[in-house]
Image 1 (cartoon, rainbow, N blue to C red):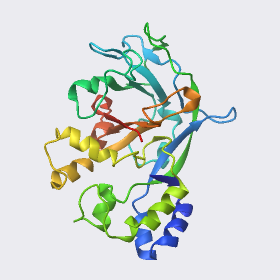
Image 2 (image 1 turned 135 degrees about the horizontal axis):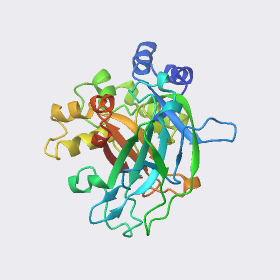
Image 3 (image 1 turned 90 degrees about the horizontal axis):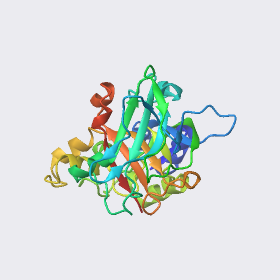
Amino acid sequence: MTHGSRDALRSLALQHLSPEVAEKWLGLLRPGARLEAAASSDDGVGQLGGLPSLPVNVEWPVWDDHGPLSFIASIDCASLPKDALDIDLPEAGTLLFFYFDGHMDGGEALVLAEDRESRAGARVLFVAAAEEVVERGTPAGLKPYPAVPLAARTAMTATEPWHPSVRAAFAPDAPLGNRYDHPVCSQEFLDALWDFDDEVGHQIGGHVHSVQNPVEIEIAEAVLDGEVPWDDPRLSKEAGNWVLLAQFDSENAADMMWGDAGALYWLIHPEDLAERRFERAMFTWQCS
């Protein structure tokens, strides 16, 4: 829910928490690569929108019986500050993100994590650096988003106090996804965090900035087919199995609006990331 430098977040925490609690909370921060529109002098790491470069033998992703997916973003792994991140990204190659955004059917079909049949409506493709690629035009009836070059900078990211990792550190017996009686969950500290930073933004790695409840819980519920209640420890365990691969906020410069100023999220198991099984990434979206 918050990003910034470690020093700035330490200063903020010490204003509202005891030194012991502040240091414990700081130990839960994770580094993320924040993506922003690139200036002409910036080193680019990819782009929002535009046209993708796909391997010559790979077809444009399609959701059967619905239509082609829109191209959302490309990320050049070699240009990311991987040494500063804590997820096992490829040393080189390109990540391509596609999503069925409703332009082909007027928003009739929704891609929802809990709907297994809709999961083909969001896709991550990894293109190895050695593969022969060609820029593809969009399929008929699909208009590309305006291209917005991206630059990256590393920031520390904090998550909600009701996120499973924070809850486990400070109130392991508290109900999953709910507020509890602890200084890290006080209204004073929450207000300070939101005043410090309330932007979702575009990001690779780090803690998710959820618009609603923690995205990891939403993914865990979907994986467990909604059959596990929130007080079942299996749900908390499953939520802890997922890390953020990428989040893409609504972006005026790219004419991207996800619901009511929402965001798109792709999460993945660390084991699948290490094995480059990007087809196993899980997608969801949230809006206000």
